[in-house]
Length: 603
Image: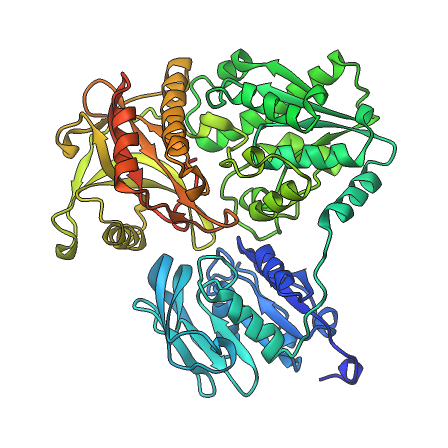
């Protein structure tokens, strides 16, 4: 250690961003523990990190043996502070310490970790536990001085440690909610290994955010896009608390891509909190549908929708006499939007471009014309803020709904390939499987995938189905999503075919009705809050003359990782039968894929 680095008391954890989808979440989890954390770029120098009590290397989408992959300043290893590498950071740290890293068995989603060492990092956690994986490379061999701490069925070095030097690596993600003892591991690292003390947590985020909105707005007013979802509504209500009534105006754009009764529901709920008179509604459905006609690729859909929102905002401001120089554009952007749009760091992968991160919005941000009060928060934190603001539970607890609306739940294609049978491993019979030649967006190894789908037929044994789903997505590079047929008039699964389809009112109305049926049955059964989100997706797979619906009930805490929800069999049957009775629906499927390897939305 250099003389200048001695003696000074160290505080907090430095998190080095290597491009991972979950980098910001590491800092957020440490904050939940009362530990200060600061994120640094991968090329941060030793001198900038010397004041910290520990360093964490984040995950990332690349391979450490790729010459273009991000590295770290090797001098950091000379600091006398504990180090923890996560996923890509685990592989990078191992490689820098002399271990071998190479392509290995891929793991995406849930895995069972078996501990070989219970002290230090894993203190107080069980010998066998569930962790969340997202990798295709693995640490293959360790040099002298580094000990194998844990393994999974597919990963021999799922965790390593140089106990004497306080250097650790874990192939899984302890920062995500689906690693069941991840919080304990981070606490062990920060409070135990690094010797930090808890700080007092922030007691009143609302008061701090109100102050920040006032500071950011200055003398300007805010023109807000309100979609009806949790994020934009909470951001709108927060801004309305911060600024006088005449300086906050909301715009709800009916794009023709909304859920059934969405507009009326939003107006009524905003009336309950005194914000209904600050909202303007515009029907722009013809404009959006015209622009989306014939568009197949999901990224192009998102770009078009983002651009149109800006055009509508500009024309609405002109009609309302709003001076663009005196107003800011308000958005309900939350941190996962930025992460998945590839904007969290210079090395993060693009998963999907959110409409609030399209090129036009990025330009306005660069010009200082956008205010986003929730940009550093996750969905669960936004719900907490909404409750603190006194919003109705029908607003704060409603299922998330994407800004692009049903456009990204209505798959389009020019393909006409037939469905093809797939041979399953003997352990997975008597399930039958076919390959659907349609594609959906996934996240594997912290990078975007756009891969095809496997459809299964057989009994709804959820735990067995999850094992099949994991096996199919982890083997090879063909699939990132698996569905199970649960209803419909279709005969043999292998008799299906893909049919050309584009966005039009008829398809959107059919999807809107299917979505409404799923929501109504869940609400009437009193179990709507048993799932975190419930996309309903229309896919151009035909067995007779119609198409197919996919149900995507999901459970998550923050949207970064997720499990497919295990709906009670009677409820699943009721929903599937009701939707299958709609004219134009041949089959109903249940999405049985976790995140990763699939994203929550299909596009």
